[in-house]
Amino acid sequence: MPRLPPDSEFLDPRDDRIIYPQRVAISKTGMAATAHYEATAAADEILAAGGNAVDAAVAAAFALGVCEPAASGLGGQTMVLLYDAKSRRKVALDGGTRAPNRIIPGVQERYQTLRGHRATTVPSTPAVLYHLLSRYGTQSLAEVLVPSIRLARAGYLVSPLQHYLAKRELKHLREHSAGQFFLRNGRNPYLVGHTFKQPVLGDTLQRLADAGIEDFYQGEIAARIVADMEANDGLLHADDLARIPWPVERRPLATHFNGWRVFTFGPPGAGRTLIEALNLLDQFPEAQRNPDTPKGALLLAEVIRKANMDRADRPDDPNLFPQELEEDITRTEYAEKAAKRIRHRLRRVKTSGETTHLSVMDAAGNAVALTQSIERVYGSFSAAPDLGFLYNNYMSAFDVRDIAHPYYLRPNAVPWASVAPTLVFRGNKPWLSIGSPGSERIVSAILQVLLRLERGATPFDAVEAPRLHASVRGKVSLEASRMRNDIPPLLEKHGFDIDRRDPYSFYLGCVQLVLRGRYGELMGVADPRRDGSAGGPAG
Image (cartoon, rainbow, N blue to C red; front, side):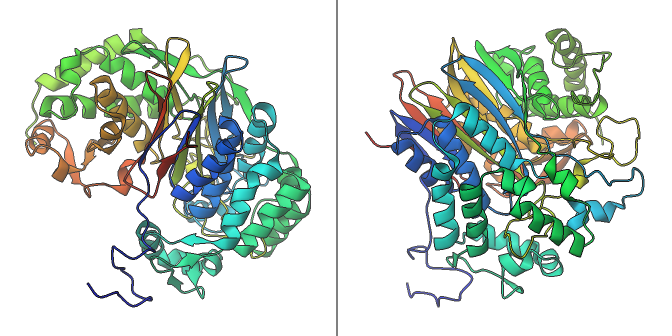
């Protein structure tokens, strides 16, 4: 086969500029699974140097902001679920971002919450990662930033997925300041296999390593953010940043399923949805919970839809006020009642924002599930010219209609989040670290992997298997060509609208998991739907 010209959009599959990430890996000493192979390499480097799971997770999180910049970065927010083996504590780090002080409730136009400098909230990622590292890690900030700084300066190869996303969002990239970094000459997407370098971002990361995280909020980096905001009519000012958004340590939510103890992330995250879905499924015999059969897929769609509806109907913000909800959707008593309604629906036939995730575990028993985001793909499409990272667009995650809503857009408010980083225990030790990006599809992606693991699937088969998601309005998105052909008709008979997606759909999440085997070995699995890999030190 002749080699294609270097400026071609598509390359010969044998070209050394095409990377085939290692999706499954085994190690005795430490393991990471992330959404990009370069971030996994960063975690591997830290683990091999003697760092623990927290050190590796922080290094990988910073690296993802370099090599998966459309999904996360310094300008976003980070949520973490952690098991600290030394203290035996399970901790949820609530790193929710905050709306600017100068928000005037009721006057923000919808388009202003989607793109541009006015769409941005106070970035929490630098503060959360430093808190995690300084409290539970063993290495310094400068040490864990080494891989990210090197990656930003030396560059990495643009993947087919990244090229596709840049083409899809080309109009908005050209219209906003991010285009100067993420488009060639500010006009066209970088080609597949192109080495993409970010020297400006590398300098920003180096300054964090030298001056510390406080510089991002109260020092030179903060001054540059404020100057950029003032020049572009943004709402973030020095007083917003100076109140550093250190994360709040909370107790995770928990439930039992299949003899496991499942711990996940509470409000403002979506762990309540996962807990309710597991509790609902537990009301049905295991034989009926097979997602690869028509009736099992129908049950799964009904459960996902019900759990998402309940979360939307019962919003809960632990920062705002203690709420006494009429029904706690995480309790098994509620699941028993809701399951009766689902059984009735199963008998009745009708006629008729982007995120990334990483998981890390080490031989000492520490486990980290970390989900971070700049909200939608490319966030606000805006970036400071002398800093190099994308600002988030979390303003779009607030409720702007109901003034009594816990997540109504007001000064210093925290937005909705769909994240659900999760740890599963067998006995007293963490067995599984898991999570996914995908907005409202996060919980459904995690849920389906857990269901398949329950049925004895190998970890890779559980992650790779075809997925579906049911929206609140009754639309089922599914990888139909990989499923039995009698599944869509049964869903349609029960009133669902069918949305056929690609065989390995970017839309349906990207699960990263690390699992501890029977003999103490650590297995990592990276979802083949994106650019992720799994890896850990040899030996």
